[in-house]
Length: 351
Image 1: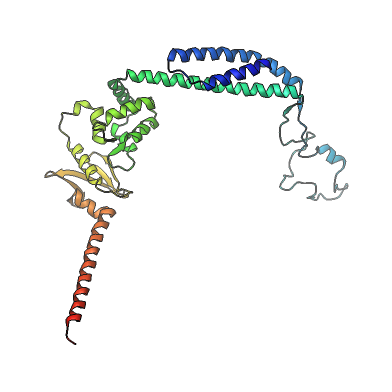
Image 2: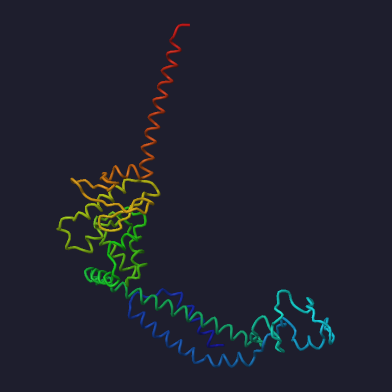
């Protein structure tokens, strides 16, 4: 008990002290704590012997009486030659008649050891408390070491190396880099916050850490506005494309994202790119071709082509609703003017 009290006081004092910021010091503390845990494990058999010597089984009433006793004093037992009748008094409600009989009583719970000696019980309880303190100390030390090692790796962070790892990981998954960005971009407006970007990469199971991703997100956010748009995402992952002209598919994607971003509603109109030049608008599952014709992004409708902005006005409920509201407002104003004019004429007319 004296050793346990000393160990408890030592662990409590150590937990009250802040952990160091130096990796070698933390590793030294881990080694010291490992020696303490080994010493404690060697004392475990002594505590087990005390617990066993002063413990007994808890007495719990059985759920039902042994069947042998029921057979000695049966209730409603039939005589020889009488037909067998089911007696509800001898069969518990819901029990099966085909249940096999046994002389072993069925107990509701397993018997648990009960330490009867107060000093022995105090010793076992103190041992469990100190053991939990030791485990918590071990967890904090290991987490501190991992955090400091991540900080050290960030000091020598090489984004080119991170980019090669990320692109290689995506290639092994046989996924396109834009597929992951679209998955993170929940509202499909072409940009995500840095926090959403970090969480999205971490949830993808790519081997990285939050500290590393905070560094990466700052690099992706090229203009420093707190957001990462699809162009920043691609240009950062593919720096060799910076000086190359945009392809037609990239121009279409830019214009689609620009038009969709005009909507300021909480539930923005959804536009999904299914493939190159193929999009799905709103809740419709219909695929529509999108092309650039005469420097204008056009959407295939029926047998012809419609400009993207005109198509969105007709199909986006938000934009269509604004047009209808504007027409309704103009109609109300015109009706008000007419009523005012008639009232003025009535007042000015001679009686």
